[in-house]
Image (cartoon, rainbow, N blue to C red; front, side):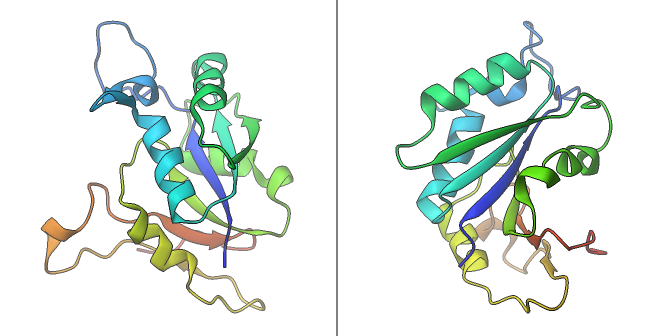
Length: 162
């Protein structure tokens, strides 16, 4: 079972407007910063090690993660100096820390229920090929979390054509 995740938390959320211009990952959702909700859900789903890719307000995002991560969740950090670019650039910033390990690729600002990720983490992947799962909206869209389920990949994966 996959127990590692790369969480992309580098962007500034330019479509998310708040008066302070703080990272949207630090904004509370029902009293908890969005990023902490992502870390908690990932941990509850079975993730034990997270590589968090930071960029915009990197120090503040890192401090929030270190202070609020669930007990038993190991954190490492990768810095993306090109955080204004696409998410793929942030994913590449983590590659030296991940190596050849399989991992779940998560967005720091996507809220999801742990059972969604648990199902994906249990998926058996063929070790000799590159595999990925991507969101395909079910006919019961209301049963899926906003943004759909996370993507599961291995370090040899190329982005799926979803």
